[in-house]
Image (cartoon, rainbow over all chains, first blue to last red; front, side, top):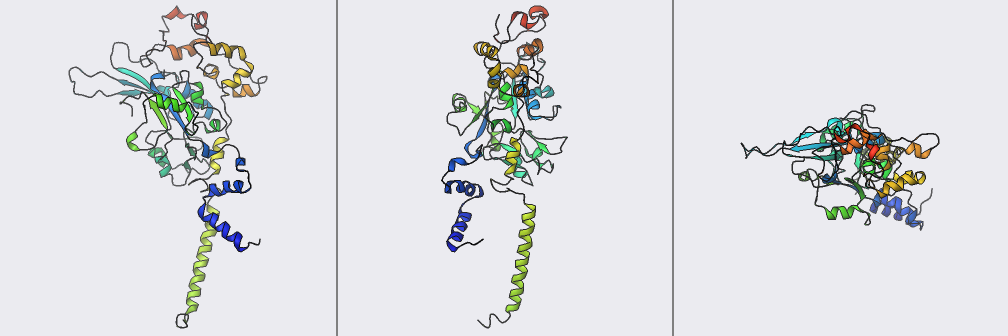
Length: 260
Length: 152
């Protein structure tokens, strides 16, 4: 291979100025066909989820659909998504200064619904909170991975490289939302991928597909025509544990202060 | 200048040692760092593709409507319009791919209805709920209601 000085200088400048991804895209630009960057473009999406607490009826169809779609082991403690029932009792009239402690339950991850355990007339309020990986933009789990096996994809999804995960469990401990587990079959970590195999094919996630009330909505924040923008505008939304500044992309509407 | 290069032999040896060390480092690094690592960030770029490989199990309602036009239309017209076919009928991407080989799943009524419509205080106030035991005295839900277009 012979390289003249001009070529050498051009290549070196490119190498110094451009990142790996940019120089790969540059190859297409040089050939005059930048539109030929192949298939699904990770740089053109920024996925997020919107959850309306006031619409969730606790049917558990999302939990079941997730297990089926992603081959998640059946036990409740292996869950990519689950539903919690919160019950906040009324204040005790004899001790009005005591803050009522919320009770949380999630039988079988909520997969088969919730048997009524708070009979009418016992006071307090109850509601359901669906949970899943928050796909943090500044994710604690990604920061602690010692081998670069978990990462924030350029489209905003936190994914796992199962071929390189060594099963050290650091990320399981680091996740403030408890969204990770070790798959007992492979001894590698597993978590919600936002149904990455579906969304890159143009489908919605399995949980959003089966949600009967539209409590779960999935959308692309980089697509200005996506209805998720209207939802985020029309509701007052919150993320879980905002004080941790994780850059969570799962937005909750109607979230009670009791939810952790 | 001559003074400076008097012991050049040592410098050359040192330089060679450094060069050899650098070479070893580069060879070992090339062996250990997987292909595509660092291309998009501190991870193997190929892992993104690996996460896309799985085949979907839920076909999505558009796929159902291609063959089952009539029930899809009555569903879209009624109170259950927001509900996907596969919410009740189960994951049927395999059936959608090979309708002749793999049968669909006829939803069994009562357990499915109750999953959303059994009385539960945690459900939002406007959601229609019944007491499954006393409501209609154990008759099948579909005796009175059409699951695709609910109401009486």
